[in-house]
Image 1 (cartoon, rainbow, N blue to C red):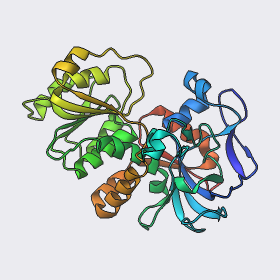
Image 2 (image 1 turned 120 degrees about the horizontal axis):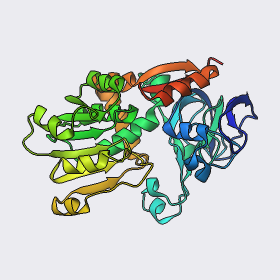
Image 3 (image 1 turned 60 degrees about the vertical axis):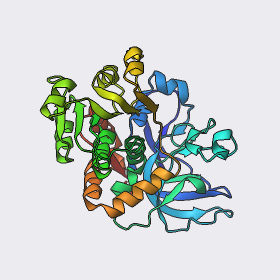
Image 4 (image 1 turned 180 degrees about the horizontal axis):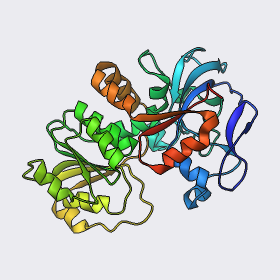
Length: 348
């Protein structure tokens, strides 16, 4: 099969022939149709310090995908050949305290598809049946199915706290931040503001229906509050950027008792006014991945019940290229000015 392969501890990928993966007794083999390019994949491609500390080569990367089941192991019970599926990328142990308590997203032995085991930048991928999400809604296109993983990040983050009637600040208008706009609107938020410095991404945010898209190179968040007619600070903060200045400014602009969900991974330490966190009685919650599998149920239910949200999430995919043009796709994703980039593995 064709696959994007990292043969050793160095930068780059190669589109080469690799042996097809074999399904074990509890596994499902999937013919990959589409894959999304994630920030994690950019780290792996560039072989930066993060990648060097977590990746073992050789490796086939890629963890955001949609495809068709072509083979099942003898112990697989529910997934069928021909099912259209996406995959939960966190493979858990099933026996640690969190797994046994039903908190599988907190498994201390998690192995990530496309990071610690071969992933979906290939014509075929194998994952356990327990990680397969079957799409029963025919309106889920291959492009939309390919971004269920990051959509799940947006849903997990946005729904961490009740949103009905709340004023919401989202920092970072990348694909996940953009999807969080639609989720927050669906969940009943009053005013939604999003920050970034990329004019194209802020325009995408406006198209998603945000109340105010803030270019923080020209306007501060406090000014945005005034423009929105807010008397007090934001009730809910969704930190999606990982930028070192985003969280401190968010904290400065939260209402007393405000709640912050943090998805963005900072690349350096962040200086936080912990005195303000304490005296303003703020709640900070770290988010990683998706709740397994409550987030997946929420995603499918929202998409099938809300055509506006369905269109908004689908519109986050701004570029689709043949997998043969993967280098161009990675360049577009790294440029960071558009939405989600999807590679089509049916057009090699």
